[in-house]
Image 1 (cartoon, chains in turn orange, brown):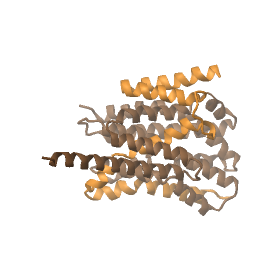
Image 2 (cartoon, each protein chain N blue to C red):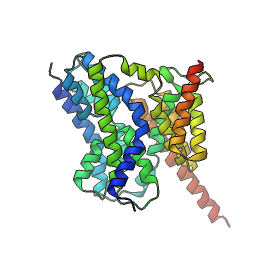
Image 3 (cartoon, chains in turn yellow, orange):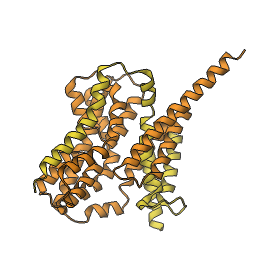
Image 4 (tube, one colour):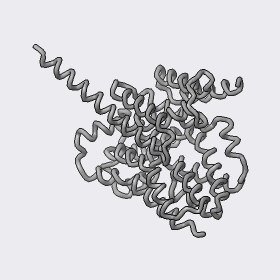
Length: 104
Length: 241
């Protein structure tokens, strides 16, 4: 079976999606209302990636102290909030997961 | 004053922690693609032609199920729709660049690069070389993705699963936390983050990453609404005698 046409097609649509607004918005003055809405993209999308990773580890909703990723994420969020230090936040979050995992 | 070289290297450095989390998925993808029946070189080329983690996993599954090529293309399109938001979000920052830069940086625009890069753009600084930072972050991720895919193809073992068992994939979520939390500077952004996150949890079982897309739209709308009501309230208070 020749997979290449499908892979090329998939690559092309992916590239077109990523290029779309970079080209379109690059050629016009972005209206203020759009500019204001775009401010919320990082918080909205990244949280939409974070929350299921933390609250549905292994695909099951788990809001309990037994959820090591939830505890680690809360600790990491606290460190991020207090220090704004990216590396320290990652170290605390990963360290917490490893320590908690070794106890369960 | 930052030089192109120093911006490029900081972009690479900023991306490093995320790479920890990306490597297991690259290895698993490589192994999975070969298992699905793709010849090794085709499997490897997928990582440079599509260059989108979750879409590649779904494509490999579809190939395994002998789905028609058009179905693969349409599915990948839907799965990657969220990148249109990244494109719009980053567009104002790239507007001044020549076309070839726009094309190159668009090709490198993944979840993991976007998260790092948009945070850098939102930081106040007078650097005129931030596109070099973007290139550094993008290329660090790109080369890691290619290398880990190749490892998966060669090893064809449970190496990736073993790394996942160590919880390395959590490095991606933790890095995103480190980037998002300090950006929660007003209630409108908090509303966007909370509503986006909660909708994503509720809609996680929707296929093709559509839950993520719905969550993003709800989150952005929530941010806009909260900001608008707060602006109106201050206006009312000001006009009061």
